[in-house]
Image 1 (cartoon, rainbow, N blue to C red):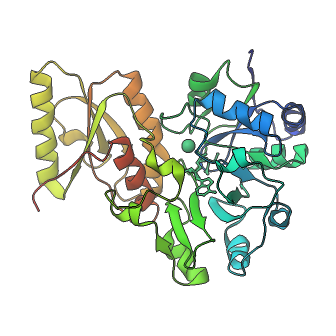
Image 2 (cartoon, rainbow, N blue to C red):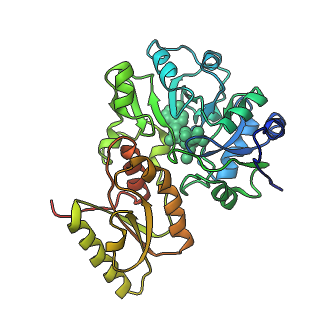
Image 3 (cartoon, rainbow, N blue to C red):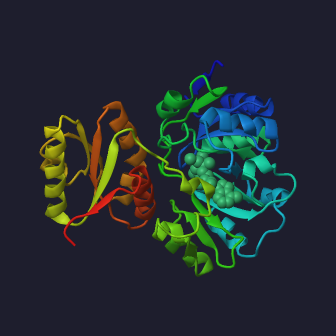
Amino acid sequence: METKIVALTGNDNTNIYETAAEVLKQGGLVAFPTETVYGIGANALKPDVVRKIYAAKGRPSDNPLIVHIGHASEVAHYVASIPDIAYPLMEAFWPGPLTLIFEKNELIPDLITGGLSTVAIRVPSHPVARGIIEASGLPIAAPSANLSGKPSPTIASHVIEDLNGRVDMIVDGGDAQIGLESTVLDLTQPLPMILRPGGVTKTMLEAVIGEVAYDPHLLDSHAEEAPKAPGMKYRHYAPKGQLTVFKGRGQEVIEHINQKAEAAKQKGLSVGIIATKEDADQYKCGLVQVIGSANKPDEIAANLFKVLRTMDQLKVDVILTRDFSEEAIGTATMNRLLKAAGNRQIEVGD
Ligand code: TXA
Ligand code: MG
């Protein structure tokens, strides 16, 4: 298929939104930016159309999709009931990077939910996502716009790399600001449970509704039960090189990484190192990529997937990184980093 690639130019993008909305209404696939990552959108109410999303991404169909809507008042159309606790959350965090899970009603096809009785819904805040969703008048199913298993796309060139020829249209709206996917919060449990950490943190949620739990899997990847968000069980976000995370403080970690890099080089392997601005010049060998300042969790989050994709372009065999602060969005950054590493982590010192 030929993919129409359109870049936003001026302030008035109404025409582009209308063209994209028309493609969606005709049952096509449109990739567009959201404030988290780029998504591939399709009409959520038509199973035949939704099926095309799974095909375009090469995604297993037991991994459910998030339904994107323009306004909180539309939730009622698609769910069996709205728990009281949902109202203050929608009020505080929508539009924005929070996905809520409700019991679904019969309008939502089983293909969206991977056969689950629940549906994930969010109201994005990015003006381009909003413009397209509102012009279409449809609920839009939209997973991240990467090929299954690759890092989520935060700029249009990532989307083009993965999906050119596989979707009808790609709208280039610049950088996705947050750079990590939305927080997924399950409201169908007795205690609201975070299934995927993101830009809306546990502390932020608890300030609005009181106690919130983490899916035990987020705290212990060897937890007995499977993760409750089916997507979290896959080895996501993976770069091609073998990524290892070195956990520890200060100089010791840097020295350890330098030794490992040297050893890999001796074996004839090419090495990439992910560094913070503050420690970049202390790495002695390998291709050093700066992810951001150690004191700016938002910057590190926004650059993580970009850096992982750069490592693919550099064709490194081995990627070494220190861990990052788990302050604020840092919890989500470390969750994605360890997934990308297939949980390969080494504690340095104690
Ligand atoms: O920020 C985002 O959420 C991006 C942008 C495009 O909006 N979308 C996104 O979609 O990350 P996707 O499909 O890549 O990830 C959706 C996650 C998966 O881990 C999936 O398993 C989980 O949400 N999920 C969806 N519906 C669910 C449900 N009913 N129960 C549990 N988990 C669900
Ligand atoms: Mg994804």
